[in-house]
Image (cartoon, rainbow, N blue to C red; front, side, top):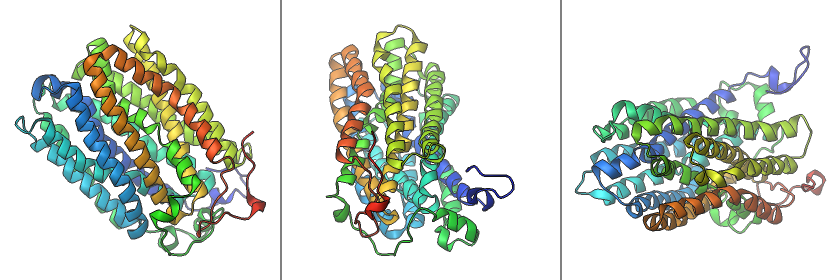
Length: 450
């Protein structure tokens, strides 16, 4: 992944890259995670119109239940993962979300939206552990110069999962909702296989027998070896860098809007039902997939090829993402289905590129043993923003779908640049903190973005 001469080669080229196998496991888990959470967005219009007859407000309550659980879980699971370790913490997380994904299939019409809300709450608790575990794993297994790329690659699994859902579900569920329960049973077996692979494969690189000394040296080449002392939530909460990361996660509410309401928008605007939604949603999330990898590559390119400091590389990459996303404000103004799909896909790709860089802010600044907790705090803030957005959107759509979607896409297009401004105001230099949460020596501090 690094450049070097054929004769000698760089250290990154000469080591046995076991870390990429670990990254493959993160990619697979994130794919399963997003298949689970995307099913409701794909099936939503069908369940509303043919099975449960929800209104928009009730559907928003189902999403709110998930997001409240996700917010609480992000805060709790991040700390748990930092305490029990990535191996056990991630297995617990995927075990919980697999169980509650299966529980969706047992909801009947008598239970209505409340039954779905309960199942979604449990799913949100379990799924909240995915990204804290992934970011902590990347911090443990990759040097800083590769973390954005590694994050972009595993985060691409979210889009693969979001693509697989509309691709597979119409094969087993009819337009009228027949066999809808099968969709929620689909990922359970995959999840259980993954847990076995994870528990038998994962160890920290310092303790893994398949990691060579050269690869371990490369992994630790730009980070300090840390003690096993735990860092509590309460020590990272007051730090301004924690809240800069939280601001970077506010646009998560936009991503949840695409995931949970994108199918509803296309159904309202262009009359698309389950099988008609498949191709547009697949295209949107394929574009998001490319954006995730592009965003990770972009800041890594700035760091490794342009020799930019991490602060400048991350923030310029995020600025480019914000500009790419802006045109989505016109999604409600077009009468052409594929123009709307392209604009949403471009914005989804921009979001995932943003996300690949936003996630690395935590591991760029904080020690590895605090990373999951910081990611949990930021994820909680993003989830709470989504709770507020879903509550408002559901009520507005029941009154006027046209104006509701217009406001939603206006916010979706402009939020990123506003967030970046506040990130830079809060954290202009991105000065790293050591394992005691003290700033590192001024001699290695980076210059702010100019």
